[in-house]
Amino acid sequence: MVASLVDSTVSARALGIARMLLGAVALLKLCLFLPDLIRLAGEPVPLPVVPLPAVPWLLVASVWAVAALLVVFGIAVHFSGGLLALCGWYCLLLDERTYSNHLLLITLLVTFLAASGGGRVLGRAGRVPGAAVLLMLTQLSAMYLFAGLAKANGSFLIGEVLLLQIGVDSAILPLPLDLLPLPVLVAIALGAVVFETALAVALWFAPTRPYAFAGGAALHTVFILTMRSPLELLCFGVAAVAVYPLFASWRPGGSDVRGSAAPASSGPSPMASDLH
Image 1: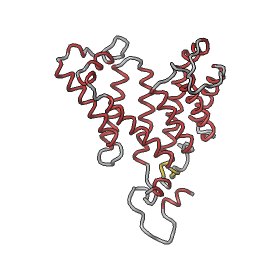
Image 2: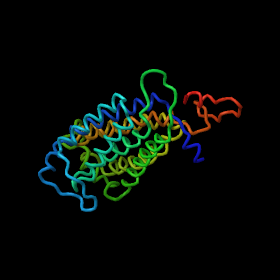
Image 3: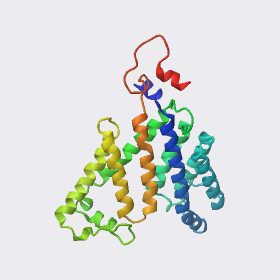
């Protein structure tokens, strides 16, 4: 089983599309994070556990921007993706106030993307090694699972959190949830817990995957439209949805492109020929 995971493959084009989207999201995240980065340079509150050297914010931002653009265009992805991930980890560990769930997710995905090589969008698609991609899939699935389980608490299930996060004036589409009766709010909250938990599992199986893709895209659209900080949620949504096609194209080692067991033969398998 370990060998089948290590020898797994994924569509080079699906990986290339994910790379472009993650690079673009990282660039947008830099634009949103830059004011905080400038402010922290003058008012540092460093983490005592991981003391990092002070790097000028302009240098961090410049490396981040250039690395993100190189990732978008697929140039030296092992190196440029590694630099981009390094910028993300530096900012996450720089200060007590720089932690962000969205930045952590983007940084983790970019870290695994750098290890994967980034695929390609143009030319012959073919298949490329997918061991690092499996880490991207696992990370996204774990994120949905823990997001669902974390909502299984009294405050969320009675609708308090929904009233605080949805319908605020800064939302693109402020929904008046406060006008809904309590049983309806409880039903919505319970549905969110069940849906996000189920999404973590449904993405892995072909029969449920189309519903997971549609439901996940709809979920992130609702977040963007109805909650505060829509651009932050746009980064989150695009980073998550960028990984979806990889679930459909990832194959363990020993399977052909369609995912069925490869027949035993003395000649090279179709997958092996794709890799060369």
